[in-house]
Image (cartoon, rainbow, N blue to C red; front, side, top):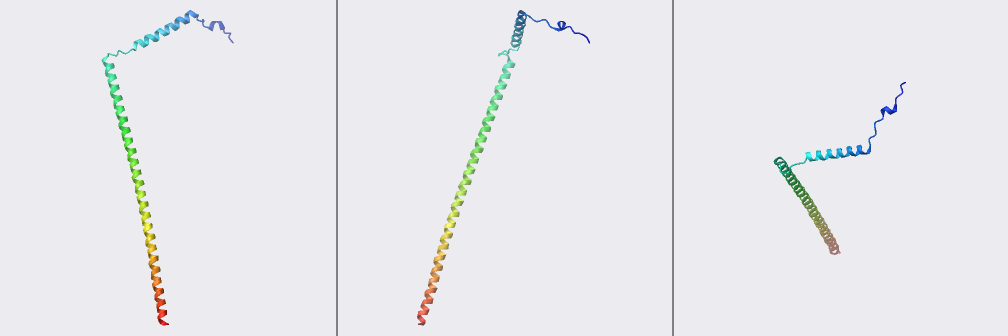
Length: 133
């Protein structure tokens, strides 16, 4: 087994001044990087790119408005269809009720006619019996 000298592996600890210089150099490098990427607003390529972005945004807004209008129209159509179906169901219910009432009136008239017919037959039998006496 070999003995390893721990002192030879340790790195030299940087002093406060050296750390400050390194941090300042890093900040300066970031600033230079930012300034190198700075865009010239009067550059024709930049202006063309901005115009393309604005056109795309306007087209997107128009498509969204169209989609919203179609959605609203579909919703209105659905509401109108539901309302028409409800009105048709109500009209059918009213017609069914009227038909039931007409059938009840007809049945009542038939009972009255039957009762009148039975009374006439009874009166005829009574008159025949009276005539025989």
